[in-house]
Figure 1: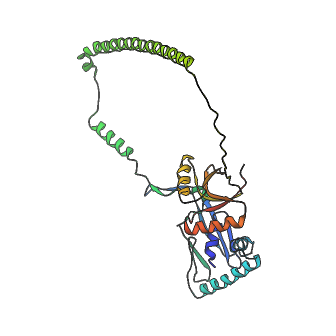
Figure 2 (figure 1 turned 90 degrees about the vertical axis):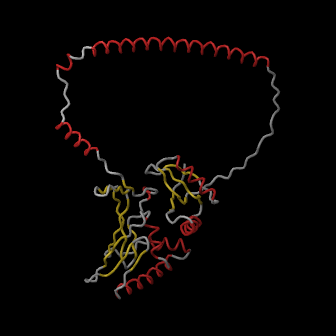
Figure 3 (figure 1 turned 135 degrees about the vertical axis):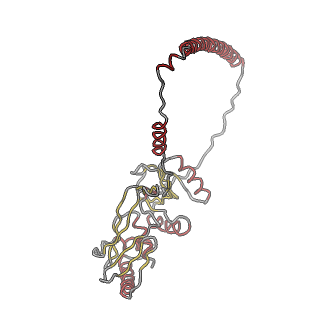
Length: 311
């Protein structure tokens, strides 16, 4: 039994996943961060931790395994207990437990479990599609310092004496104002002539069109009624392929999935304001879980199950 796979599935939707008689994997949401030394931007995410003090069986893990493997709740608990015995034995022998996409566990010198989380998967579904990126540093402060240094060495001033030696500035300014006003008046006259010409042309075109309409004879034959059969997807179990901040990005994803044979569609906006695209929707929960397992193993390991009734 791939216990870590089931734990990983549940970490997308729950903040605490307990392995009975072993411990609990916990998630905590953190906001987007910036590394000032490298100018790297990191999206919001869930950080993982492990608490070996929380071991009471809450039934979450067993119920999920029972649904996926289609076995009884008691049989699922027995499978978990058997797997836990093996994990404890390996830890006692000094081995390091590697939970794929979750992290590693090992005993320290005081026989306490030490957990090192994995950063390969972001379990925060709101951040789906967001990745780390590095922005070039802004150097405008450096330029300002260079300008200040130049101004200190070569000050830029205009003295009263220099203004007296250039009386033609006044006449040049008057000429510029006169040319501007003249150009403005000429431009208005030109625009008015164009508008008047366009208005006359539109009236003539409208009159010609009215004459042709009055002279035309139309013969319309009724068309046969077309019967279209549309299959509407129903069900409250939706296998989500992605959630997008910009709705236009959904169309490209839907076209990609339909080309692969999926009944992809948009199901609206979730409570975080993201537009969700699904592979398909199902009425039966077991059928949806079975399809989810297939999609995660063969197509997209980051797909998840959204349970809600659409309007």
